[in-house]
Length: 605
Image 1: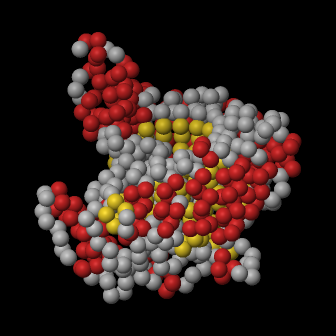
Image 2: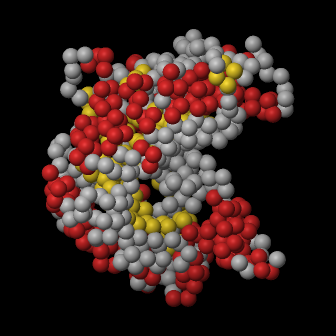
């Protein structure tokens, strides 16, 4: 036992397992087990504290380690989405040298700042709501820097995420405090921030000199992600940084004014694994001018912005053979089914299909120039997605254009049968399906049976079809009805509910089918009449960016800003049930699951 307890690696592994647990997407992590380990014995104390303090969303908790008579917690300002006021911590007196002992002990343990400690792996925060309940004021930062050197405050941060929230609470310039030698990764996400037009201290100036400080002060730096509103001199602000950092692993920046020299510098980075670029034209002569051939020799994760999808298709052809793990495509104009099929076919030919793990495709509200038969080619149907069957190791698939989705019950067997290890499927999460879904309960059952590892599902169905999965005797139309116990939340987007079906009977049928397929389902997101107006009102108050659910959750994480389809409100809301209907379905799903666990007869036919 003594030998076991003294093994630091084993102790660390136990604490790490206690922290991450099952790590289900969208389910907040519990810190109670790690806290219990810290209180068990001294052997576990330091590793458990290291894990608990490693990720911090703000410096609120750290500020509370100062003497209690030196700070005050207040609640003021507008209420957040949950009705609670924002909680601020501010300094109430001059800080003395002897006040910093506990502060320094815990500050040294923080390795990631701007990341929620309760967020599951792969997520930055537990919701998409841009509202932090607990924050440190600008006055706290000023008071701290008055008596301490900035780099002494939190000296060991390796990953830093600085967002709109830091701008809203007036602490954005204090990012310099964390630009220390250990820093390897910086995320600057201010996509929804109003631009600072002050010529003495513009956004471009802030960005340029922040990056210059990184070059001078952070020798271990490797990864940068920047999302900023379009502004003058954006490209100039990042061009010098790109040239000065030859060992970058990630350069993901939403610049649109790329120069050929910048593109050459980017493609010549030998260690670059993640990149984002804007393809203004369908020709790429700069690929032949790179310092290394082939260009992008280590690239694994690529994001392409373009006015039209055909530009991305042309880039794949020009790039030649490549191996990607993640590909994201963002188009200003929505593609036709033919253009989409051509892109996917080119991707399957030019890439190594077996290496692709995640594919994201998003498009804006403008249609590409119409062909004579555009009315027959505007909807995305199963045939347009057939090339996806080449990517048999795909784990994440997200497709979201303003074009209508015309996927029926044949889609799962035709396409998804080739993707058996798919973990996330998102179809139309932002823009919806644009018409009455042709997918019914049977199609949903096929999705569950063919993709048994699904943990996140965003899909629309037609609930008006009377199909009782629980009365099928375990089979239906040649399919064995299987259940998915991994999925806790589902987004049914703009699923169709008949106008005369928003009754308890319809809710029973829907909830019973969902409970049959997803016995552990806890949360259902779906759009309802008035969802768009409510969403716009919430966003105007800074309350969130969900895709129509009751509390702003359920949208695609880190989804790009894309405009909505030019559809009338009547078309967008046709067939939507009320929010109360979905909450009733939620309750009944839990009831059916409980009764089934008790072996209680549930034949309600």
